[in-house]
Length: 224
Length: 186
Image (cartoon, rainbow over all chains, first blue to last red; front, side, top):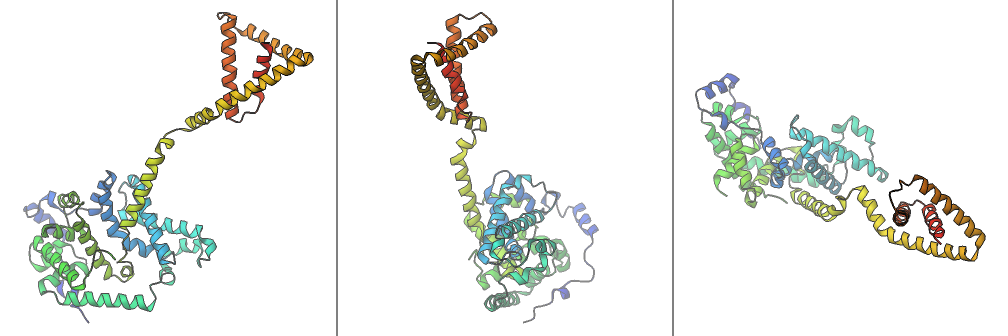
């Protein structure tokens, strides 16, 4: 199935930075209502001892961390254990995070170190790659070491993607446009508002409704 | 959960929420529905990404939270001991060993005293050592204490010293000193 290509929705001229400035000057957006870095707010809350804020960060990055660790560690159960360890380490040392880099960059380093520590402590179990090789080319190892190549997993993944495509295709046009511009073109809400000639609030609402309908159609649950 | 919260969560996913909105969500973070909806949004996004789809359904939140709880509980259970410094650890070891050391010293003293009583030669030698000690003490004594006070203090000091040294694996030398001193009192 071929989805509507998002590129067709995007006009040649996207809004330039001065547009934002003009809108701020005109009072359409208030400075205090500007979008902010969600991770920064969550991290600050965690640093003040809010464990629930950390749950939001775990939920947000767990798939990425698992996928990253799976490039180094073979067994799925070990991948989970190492990822868990990485998040626990991140929580314990989050007081040291000063925001000099993005939160995920910081978390990434912790996860890679956790994976390398795991490998060095389990070297006797005959892990194929040496730690030195991992250090040199951490990104090239993924496909060889994960179990994602199994036909069942591949088929399951294809089916899920197909379901998603179908659900998106079935969305009302205005919702689908907003969602595709966001998810596949990576436009900001403001850019989408300019493309679709509608207020930012409408964009937010459309993207939310699109996602909500897709989740309902595909039966995506909170966790498995 | 109201639709407004869902809209904010959707905007949070895109880094398009304001700080006020995020704080509003975090203010309701005890609500399981909020977390569940956030997870669903994340899963949906992960599933469209080939590299993440395999892990999209794995939930580590419960595991991470459980481990943090476990570690916190373990820490709080151990904390009274952890709070004690090395110095205090030594003193607690001393507390255990001190009575034993004193008992051993006393026993040693009794045995040696009996030997001294039965063996005048060795008793003389012990007395000679004790006399030398006493002379040294007299020389260094400021003279402000009476003889009895001085002896009592010295006795207490030697007993304490023997206990501490024994607890720190200092050997039997302190006990030998104690016994030599006690023998000299005879």
